[in-house]
Length: 146
Image (cartoon, rainbow, N blue to C red; front, side, top):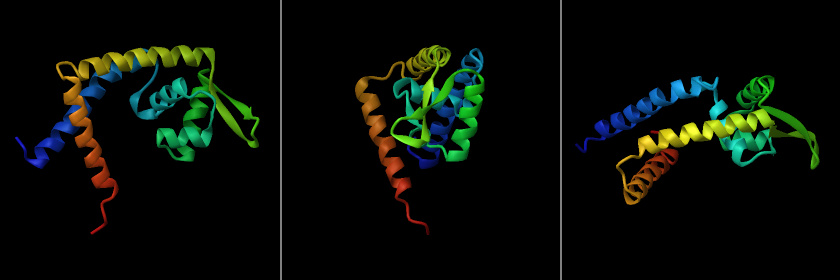
């Protein structure tokens, strides 16, 4: 089984299976996978108090998308915008206490799914797989248009 199309189908199948496991877990805490809230809360859990632009870059979202998501998360009480002392024109995005609890719960759910995902694979297996995926990403990111 080394057909390129079969390998890509397996990658897609693995991601679909991951989402099927993750979706009900996220729903149990009021989140959905597609909104970007997972990436935002996860990023702020490790890098709280960064600018909206920095957060957008880290989450790989455009400014409009990140702004909409931040508004929703702010209305839910998970984050707040604080003035940036380094710039009067920007704000720092910070988790509230409720947001921190939600992000911590999210971390536990993601860790559980990761444990299931990688069960039966050795550290070496994961390193090799990561190298292959990194190479695939590099190939596509540097792919010239025909």
